[in-house]
Amino acid sequence: MSEFRRPEGLTDYNTTPSYTQYTNAKPKKSNTTLILILRMLLSLLVGLTSGIAGGWIAARKYASEQSAVVYHQTDSQSVSPAANMNSNSAAMTIADVATKASPSVVEITYTGTVQTYGFFGGTYQSQGAGSGVIISENGYIVTNNHVVEDGESFTVTLFDGREFEATLIGKDQKSDIAVLKIEAENLTPATIGDSSKIQTGDTAIVIGNPLGTLGGTVTDGIISATSREIVINNQPMNLIQTDAAINSGNSGGGLFDGSGNLIGIVNAKDSGTTSSGALIEGLGFAIPVNTAMEVAEELITNGKVTNRATLGVYLQEVSSDYGGYTAGLYITDIISGSGAEAAGLRSYDRIVSADGTEISTYAELSQILRDKKVGDTLELVIERDKQTMNFTVTLTGTLE
Image (cartoon, rainbow, N blue to C red; front, side):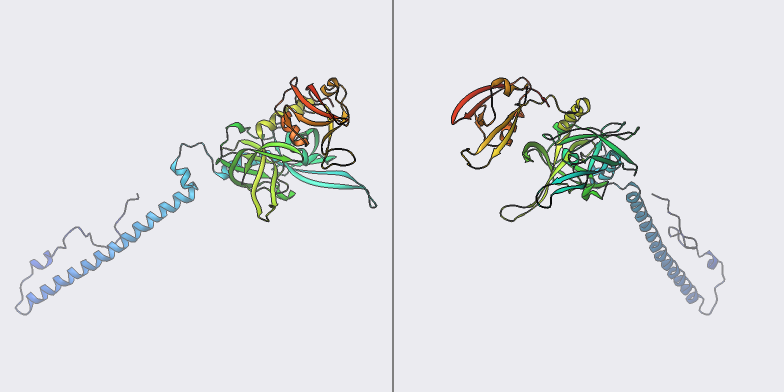
């Protein structure tokens, strides 16, 4: 606290006024005593008035200085009450996370050619935009497969505004992960976190390019669920759920934790209404970073995912009985060298069950295959020519 000084011209209130100037005076015969008394009363009145005024000024000065101290502390530190309560916490403010993570998030735009059919069919140029996250200093960028799958040329815009043409290194539809590469050095890659350690209620911060025009946008919320089973484009996925605002264009961007570590790659938002008409909002999803980085490393090394267990067939769903075919999941073609070929599967076989579980959709089969490894076996029940048959298929890696 500052030292308080007595305002100039005010009496020292802790001393008694001296009246020695009067004690040596000769008494006068007329009204001397009355005059002395009046003078003493006047001195007391002046002293009292000065004391009150001085006290008021000092109090105002004290209050002003106290107010200035509080305001200065709040203004200079800019910390939240929660942060003050636990100064040893490793958690950062949203602003701190944005400062740390934003340089690793990029904007992606693409152009491509789309073929349409029918009376007005033809080809036309398509354009789109999304987000990506830098994962290496020399320019590797992870994003979503659905951001780049229709693109033929790609442009990446960095946080500092620099633009680079990008090369597609590889993409994987099942995981919805793709990797681009730009020719640049000394970039700021994201700090990779561990998505297996996140908990429901943890801080979640999304950075990306919503609407394809608002690059560097930061939104925050919490982790709503750590592993949510979602089917996207007929692919079952285990995704992180968050209530942080996500919009078109955020796809491929980063989901960060409260310490600025990358924990997910944003890939979906549930929007619209339910069957009962209720508005859906606050539901966003991200691919766990552990999964995303595993796929990204495969794409960088091999251009495709080679270590995923596959049956080795092309499939087609039939939604209802038609033309002698029962509704279900059918094999349309066999990949040469696959486990399906070795086991004797054929085109037009209908898959009735896999490992004892009845299936009728591609998503159901994919969910079973997701837990398999290359070299594992899959027990299939097949319907062929209205007869059921049993097959054991040894799963292989990707062959094409």
